[in-house]
Length: 95
Image 1 (spheres, one colour):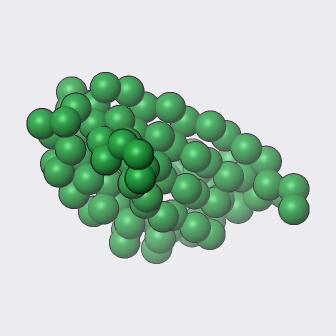
Image 2 (image 1 turned 60 degrees about the vertical axis):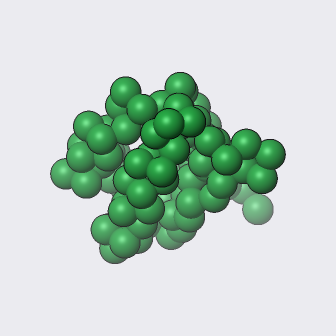
């Protein structure tokens, strides 16, 4: 059973573009990781400060490896104080 992640990131308005660029920079290296099945960035139509990453991983181990990558550490360093909140939902994909 694969793992799905829905990560909602709300940027402070004055940092929206910085957060968006940092999240966009994650796409290529993350999609190349073993176990990554989907890694797509979206922006909320009603709130341009809210970005949503929709992810699918083969299993928890693949996600754990992703969280430990240098590009994830760099993302955290860049956006840490530029967001109003981050919500991560972990879902088991069943169909």
